[in-house]
Image (cartoon, rainbow, N blue to C red):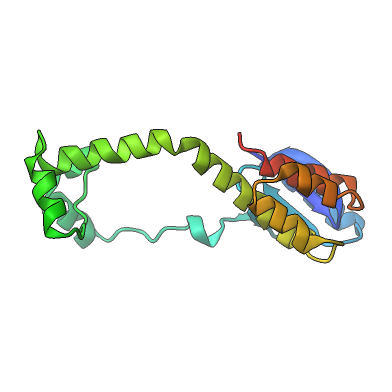
Length: 186
């Protein structure tokens, strides 16, 4: 997993988090101009690094510790907890349930097959959506005051990378190239 360090609109470093953290600390100590921001290259999310060099996990990835009572309930509840299967509620209309129950293997097997089919068929759309969101996170943090920001984001969410690039011509090279790289689905 790689990260990028920006000082204002200049990309100062890129690579593994440890190397980018070292560059962050050196830049901070040297009094680098502009805010120092570190981004996860896969998601476009900012990574908080304090001056002592430790990395703060983004709130969205922090998970509360499971209590022993929760673990016991998961082991005894319905489903197959040893296989990672946990029960969830699905709300469907009666005719949906009738159709699912009439399928070979029953409702659970049919739902799993439908989910896998949808995942395979929508994989490229999902990658494009995630790429747009990553680029937008970065653009929002770094490019919000740059000219034509709104037009750039409209082109981004319309999937028009050529239009996005043409509207970014007056932008700093590092911001433009990084935003376009994030916006391009892997």
